[in-house]
Image (cartoon, rainbow, N blue to C red; front, side, top):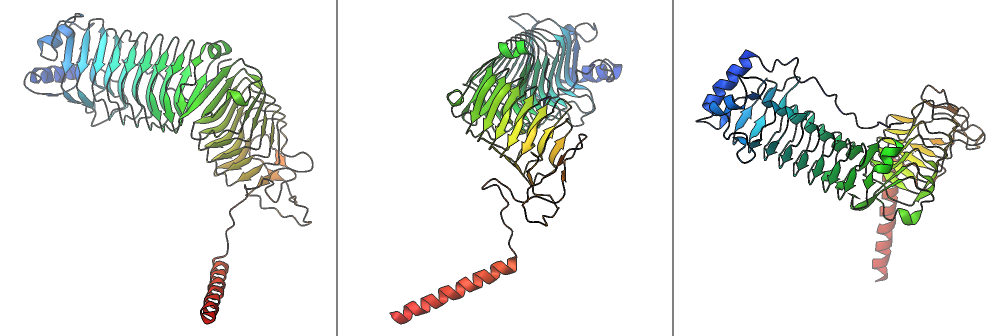
Length: 498
């Protein structure tokens, strides 16, 4: 079974249809601007296609668009240009090229972004170097499709509508780039790609998504990305020495993939080690010392306890695990406090789970027990996503001020009370006419399962998890006046004694 979640990579669009990239108007504009490059550092869009005799590298060199002759020792070079793509598809497009070339020190942007717009776009290209360019304010900053043996280094790709850098290909090096404030910083799919020492901060979805086989992801800085800092999926992926603050790691794959990952504790989440284990049993406190994030795949009979797993995208991620205890942890300010896929017989107790997008998110996970947890100020407290979420028991928990939904149940045969007591719901508007601490009418759980908490609690059973009382302001003023009078009288009495 292959897991896919959280990250949704934008489809690989057909790059050669819909934009008429070889239109006569495009070539005419490019050639005119190419002539002007001899005397100016400002250029219009550049189009080079080695399968097009009227727009190949030789034509570009003759027009003054580039220098060099395309060999390893003397590559074609496009450098030191300012290019506004305007409403055209690509600021620089190079296609069907196997010669050696370099694009360097260019500032590339689009003042009018259209449906498919690229700063630098390479299609079927090998042996290129993209170095020290600023490809900000486009739809995609840098986009390589079916490109191998290329180097993307020290570029800036910020504030692009979709990805800063997206690459489909093999044996590429992506190093020292900055990709901030995009939808995704970098999305890289292929074999034997090396992704190192990049910075990808404050992107709407991911900092870096690295997929494919034999990918190496080393020493990147990934801060405050909204959904997750780093995502991996494929075979034989090495993840080491990455620094993530305000976000963490997520992963997908099959058992064979999870087993092949080398994700070590030199990866830091909020200055604390990331723990990734696959196919382990009986893990305990000593296996999660000062954890910043915990990911378990195909693990059994283990305990995760007394950790602060906040600001890390997913506090605890369980993938096809059995008999895991998650107890006494804090999981705040994440996308998911606890995320479980195909994991059964989990015991989740005594945790503080607040200010997450989703407190607990379960897919196809059954026979789990939730008790004594506090779910507060999340967008959603608990979500059971599908019918595979069955026979879970949820009792004696506190659900307080979850913004969009306290609980959503799309599972089957889940139990929200034990026949005597249920949970505390701060938005429960029923009465307790007999004063036994149990609401007179059930609390309805949102979702297709039609579940109910038949014995909703009138008070939160967890110490320290109840509301901060909101007092009547006039009562507060009265108390302050009384205290002021008492203090004044005591002062007068003290002065008289003197």
